[in-house]
Length: 126
Length: 108
Image (cartoon, rainbow over all chains, first blue to last red; front, side):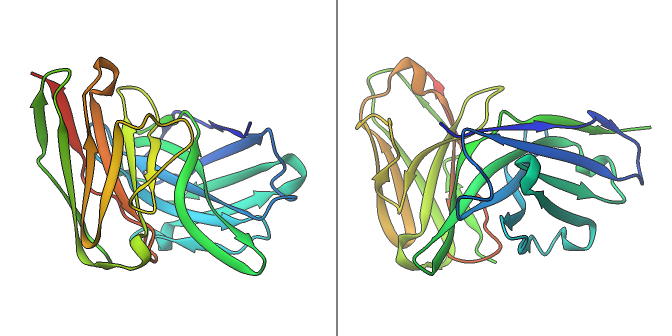
């Protein structure tokens, strides 16, 4: 059964770079034609898609965050990562990773998010 | 960008009652590319419905989805105590993939 687990610092200073990793277990990132995404949720608020990466490295980003976000994949470690630069207090949120779509027989669909990691709270504060 | 508006913001109901949640899109969502999630406090969202009306694996049949175009509905036929939570809709028509702001179903 596929499982995802986020990890990274829980506290980041304003103007610095937030870095998180999502470890995938129960399946190989490089052997399956899946997309992998990041979503965040500020405390008490709704969900916001941040970006998505294919196992080959191609990426999709939310235009509202694109200038500050980089998502990468390390197939040798079965992980994918998120970096968000120049963070402010508005970036304080629970960050989730999730599977987001697949390719099959030459057709690709980025669709729903399932399964999700448990989420990790990142607080931006000095 | 497709904006999803959920209503009502909060639904106060008793166990055993029927819950009807609405998700309205600012533009038509092609191929019924709409999903619903349930989120309980301190937990990650859980996929309930995809393709507007298909239940995800392990989801009880009291949960059903319907709709097309710009208007979608999640119905819980008879609320069980464990169903009280926040529910989100999400489209996957095209980037950026967006979520509604959520509907909280609380115990009356």
